[in-house]
Length: 126
Image 1 (cartoon, helix red, strand yellow):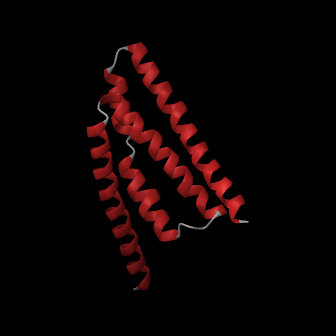
Image 2 (cartoon, rainbow, N blue to C red):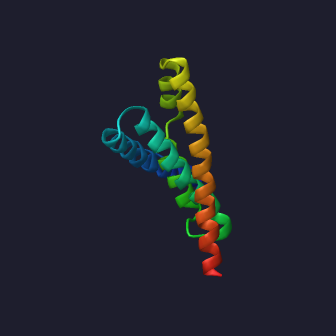
């Protein structure tokens, strides 16, 4: 049953990464409260996920197990779309629109900058 062992390993990696991601999100949101805390974790998470996802094609520093643990587990628990959605829904219209716009613009920018960092580092490695 080697295939089943690989699946159990993946589940463990995702669970361990998820545990750490959830704890880190909690700690960051304790430091930065409210909408700004959720925006912070989503932007930082998008930047880091951009680095993780583009690393494989450019540097290869993070292997498949690291990508599962950090990309799926840690980032899946660290970032929080559901809290962002609930916060936005509970706000008056204009602040909600600002929160939605900030989350979309800044998280996409985070992925772009994460990818850019990896591309720049890969050029230095060559």
